Figure 1 (tube, one colour):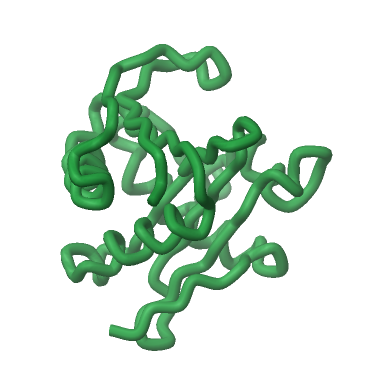
Figure 2 (figure 1 turned 30 degrees about the horizontal axis):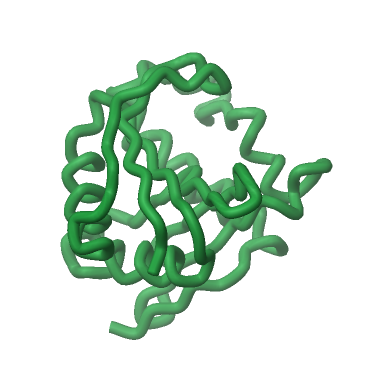
Length: 164
């Protein structure tokens, strides 16, 4: 499979459209309702990947597989040498194909240093995915905890590790 990861700074509308599918996947876990207009509300943090004082610290990407749109990743720098996988989404059609693993590892390599990856406690499939990917990537050298994140006013399972 040919995989492309491209900067999405000029593709906010495309990521916005994919984000709705991502939120749909998460809606049963976080209780998000769809609006009367048929759309999910975008979190305020979404726009900060493209505008605002923090936008240089935020990196939106589109993922393509064999030339077809396949997902996105939103990465932010949260400290001088630490990045956070803010959001990561692969279309169902491409799941269990190795695409998510390859994309995640390429992004870990691209942004050297410390990393945080968070999952909702109810999102056990995502936890299994990230444990496996990060475990393989680090040869098991990562830390996992459940923590309350004040910025999101909720608890997450978080893995922390250093990229190669």
